[in-house]
Image 1 (cartoon, one colour):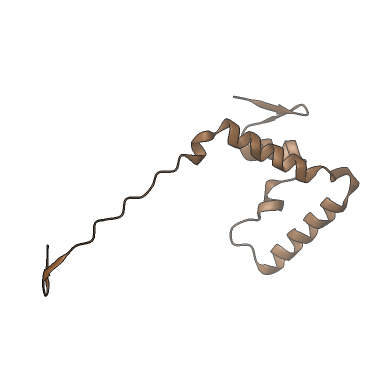
Image 2 (cartoon, helix red, strand yellow; image 1 turned 90 degrees about the vertical axis):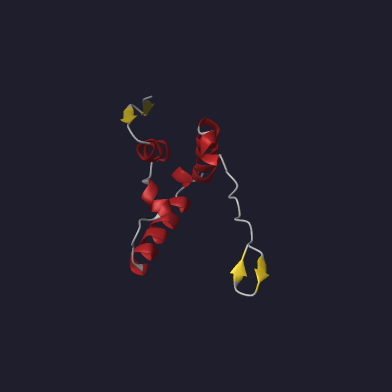
Length: 97
């Protein structure tokens, strides 16, 4: 399925989110292995974006996007309970049943 946002084709879910929100997803989620300094700079940039009147609806947009992902991908929440192994009873000292 193709997603087209503002005339641009999104190939991946991350590209779709970036086009829909107008910011890269990594800005909000971070990247694996980022340093404390990189994280501080990223969060500072995110705060600047949220303070811009152009992006005042961004939190609402994020909630709508998350709700859409949940609605379109219910399998993400297929939770399977883990079975605990039965406890072994000790019949005699040192011998398990």
